[in-house]
Length: 398
Image (cartoon, rainbow, N blue to C red; front, top):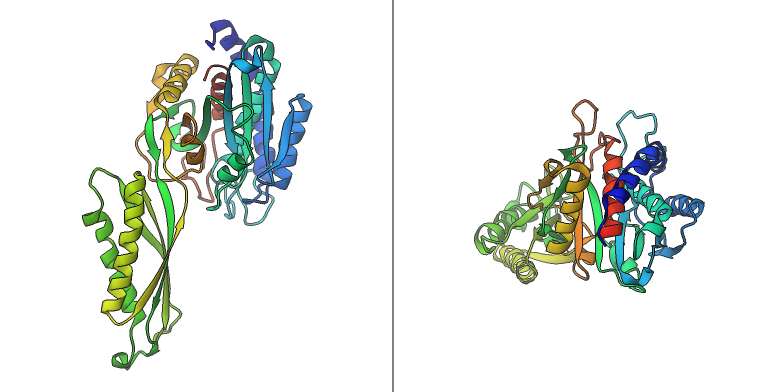
């Protein structure tokens, strides 16, 4: 459906009129964060808002998720899905905001509070204008994006992409690298696949003063870490971006004790499924054979995570065009490839999809330029108006 100027102006006027309400929803959600799989009160709050506006919904998807449906004129003519994630992170907030998290050690440090508030704001506008546009809009409130088990596959298994099946699906994610008022787009591959790696190096522990009697697992682990970097520097195709990083090493020895086991944990991220599988095999072989050459053993577990995010060219162009009309082409930026991951990827490999970025930075507001997943992170709330408008427009004409 084409979004005419009169409807566009009406949506802009209403979004501005309700902006304070959108901010209030975001602050409520920020004050009451819940971890992955625990989004019970979050789901109830969302349901309460939907009920208030007369929007039908189904809850209990992936335990705590919801799917709402808004039908316009000729509801069978088209269907677009809009998705927001619900979960928070195990981080102690240090923003000093008056609406800071009231749950110790839990914080919306990735902007999911803003995502939900923008989708709720869009739901309100879509419901109020449903006699002015054609088709059906699905609103997906998805739990457990931050959990490696991921809420997206569970929502999909629960039928969120069926009856009716959307032609396109859209989601947004805040970006503190981008100024508030701007949005970012990238067609094609955008965010990486991600897998977790767990290595257990086994040897023979003993007194550090008699290394000849031991199989030193610390030294074996160090050699494995060094050798594994060849998976990226010498084995990965140079035209396929790949990152292999290790962030945790546990060797429960002492200054004078060599441990019998060392545990190593890391991640591999890339953009090609064939190479992804080969990389897993290469990592396992390299770690096992390096340990064996030094008289030890190594057990490798690869925990498969999200695939890469694939932004459909047509869906992304629609989002780009609508954003240009709403905010001017100068406020729509081209995004670079990112090695971070998002479980929206699961949707993107099933139906044409677009994940765009919402700029939330303001150099005059503390914390809005802090990175995602940090205790100081927050957003410039003026960006919520941008998010509500674009999500609404995508529901109607995406």
